[in-house]
Length: 81
Image (cartoon, rainbow, N blue to C red; front, side, top):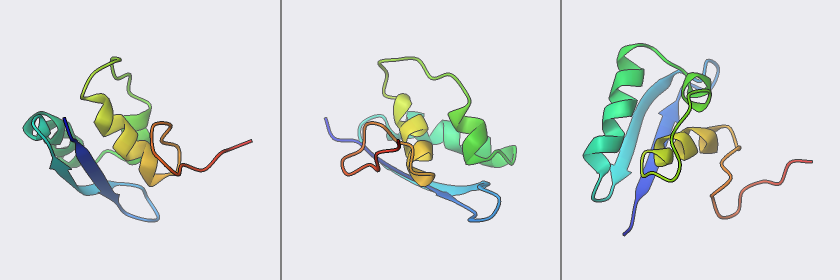
């Protein structure tokens, strides 16, 4: 299985303004992003929401964490001390 998600957010406010998803479950993943956008949520609102593990829906969490450099399952992620 191959999945890809990219979340776009405003630079100053981190308000979610869009996303792209590719994969078998893309329609399931984009639903969470659409709900977040409809309610004006930020990247931080999504990352502070519990996502069950292991699930495909965790990709939304990882996609949002990647926006602020905190994704832990991403190749080349920065290491924070």
